[in-house]
Length: 112
Length: 107
Image (cartoon, rainbow over all chains, first blue to last red; front, side, top):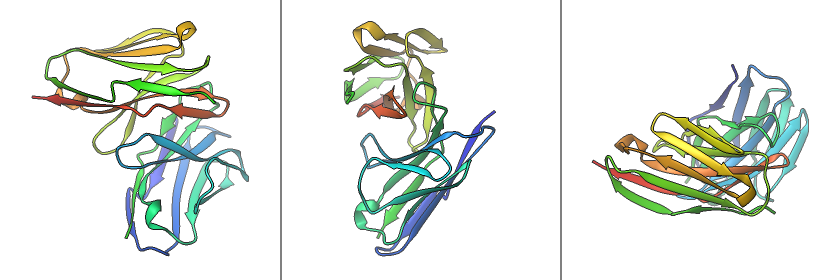
């Protein structure tokens, strides 16, 4: 069966520091991978998605970037964090838009 | 783009009560899912239900695709049912999310 791993679970970073969140998927090949952000008490906002190695689509212009160096690895990065980057970040995968999506356990990021 | 609206935004019930959560969407879709986000933030898949009716224990869901809505039923609520329930619909490669229904079950 397919599983999705996301780490770290929690992270406290100072303003201006870099960020790297990693997501990996097991049990499938060439998955569509997604990064979402959830502000406190709100719905999910799609940040990036990738349909293959090196292919990244950005939904919201911002301080963040994403990369897909390997088929089952999706990385969310920032060179300099802002206070507004605080939130709950979730990685997800699903074969395409018409099939069931599965989520990692999330990373709670606090920028101080 | 597709709009997804959930109602009610908040719901407070006593343990043992039944509830119905609604999800309306503005265009035809091939994918609709219900999720439960627990207090620790984890998103738990409840139903993948682009059409028809499914049941899983005390939970059931119905999607009427032609009328663009889906309903999630929770019967005999337990305190562990508390959390936020999201509806999400598929559009191309994306999931479009509703704002969620925050459910609080009081003992």
